[in-house]
Structure formats: C-alpha cells, structure tokens
Length: 330
Image 1: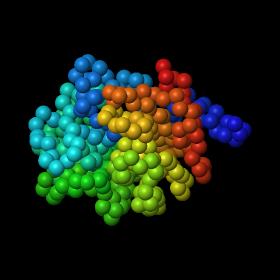
Image 2 (image 1 turned 120 degrees about the vertical axis):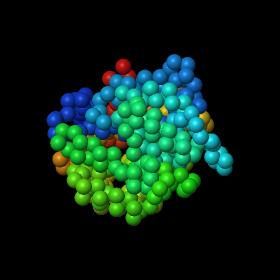
Image 3 (image 1 turned 180 degrees about the vertical axis):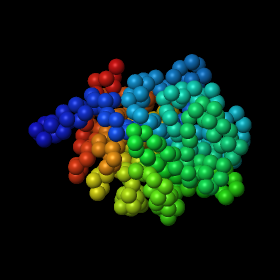
Image 4 (image 1 turned 120 degrees about the horizontal axis):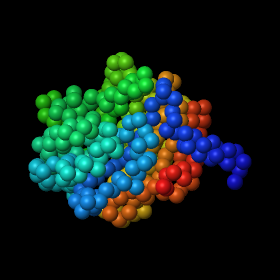
C-alpha cells in the first residue's frame, strides 16, 4: 500500500471514531438510499423482525437522518394500471423507521403507485409517526417545499425531486403529488432557499437509469451546475446501484447511494448500497464518508466489511477511500 493512501485511510478511520463528538457548531446529516417496506422487508416486519436493526447503532451517530421512502404506506388506493412494479406497505411498517429516520423524501417513481389518495394517506401516517416528509405534498408548492433543518446555529435546506417516469405522479397547482426535476425549477428552488436564509442547500435527486453504475453526462452536468449555483453537496439515487462520487469545486457529489432496504433484485450491484454521512459547519461540508451495506435476499441491509468506500474532507481535490469502523460491525 502506498504510504499516502495509508495516511488517508488511517486519518479517515480516526475521524470516524470521534464522529459522534462533533463540535457544537457542526451538524451531521446521514442520507440513505431507497427504502422499500413492502414485499420482503414487509414480510420481515409483519413477522416481528426489524430490517433496520443491523444499522441501529450507526443511524444514531447523526444529528438528522434522511432516506428516500420508495413506497406508499397506505391501506387504501388502487395500483397504477400500467406500471410493471407497484409497491404499497402496511402502515404498521413505519414503526421500524420511527426513531431511526427523522425525515423521508417522497420524490421518487413509486410514491404514486397506488394513486393520490394513497399518497395523502402516506403523508398522514408519517405525520402521525413524527417523521417529516418532503419532495411530495398536497399541491405543487408544498411538494417543492424544502426540508428545513435548524441545528447548532446552522440553517440547512434539503431539496428533493424526481425525474423518472411516470410524470403523472407530479403534483399540480391543486392536486397532490411529487416534485419533478425540471432543471430551471430546481435552480429556482435552490435560489429561493438561499434567499430564505439557508446557510447551506443540498439537493437530494431521484435520477439516472436503473442498473447503471456510472452517472450519465446529464447527471454530471446538472450536478455541477447545482454546485455552481451554491449547493453545499449533491446527493442522488434511483438506479438501485451506487454510482460513484466526485469532488467538484471543493464540494462532494454522490451520484447514487443505491438501495438500502429493498429486495427482489437479481444482480449484485443492487445488493450493495451506501449510507452517506456529511458533517457541515458554517463554511459548508467539512468531512464526509460512506458506509457500505450488503443487502440480503429478504431486503435487510448489513454493514459490509469493505475497506474501500468513498470519503473526503475540506481541501481535498479528489475522492479518498476510507476504512470502516470496527464499531460498524458490533
């Protein structure tokens, strides 16, 4: 191993060990990819199991934990007649998210699988459980409203939108739905959040083609434009695979976090995902790392003994590789 890489790995491991001891003026955010609580995970929960148990300790290391909820959670509604795959989770399944995730994005291509009434019911169940939601709403304005986080003197806005069909899931001026990723609208939302007093804005985008392990040129171009517009970081998902990371203008872009709680895939890239941990201070993202999850046949993620997951810190010009913590496996 080259000595420089050894130093980066050692420094990264040392930082992880004190991640929970962040200074008062910092905020640690944790992002998870696709969480789907029907099918295999739903059966696990119905049988008294907990698909998030293997990550319970890690999830508690962040100030705010955010995931993409890739399923309506409802008893009502009717399946979309022309979609190949539709999901709907039992409302009781939300019990495993409570206390593990503080907020979920609804901006994805499955939130509308059982219609607008089921989306409204999903939001009701999330409200009842005390889990915040964004990227979807009762109308277009509400769907584009950011998730606002105010901690330790910092005000952070998280934006969410989806750009994968069906477009019929998009919210309208007077009907419920999700936020759609029209480039100019996303830029407008980012500027509006900054004008409203956000110290930092982070877009959380549902984009890219399924099965693709590298971002498209469209993803690269738009992510960099968002950084140019002032985004502190850009985080993506949807392809059911991790899609790599880069540093652009000193800020991290994570193109795809992959799956987190999900079953039913027959290719290995979909059985591996990343948790992303960002530490922000007044100047932006100071440090970040990813933690690999290996997903079993039932859709339950397990911390992976993978020594080569992307990480970085302020001042880096390129993505580094970090070792996992021993505590990850306890």
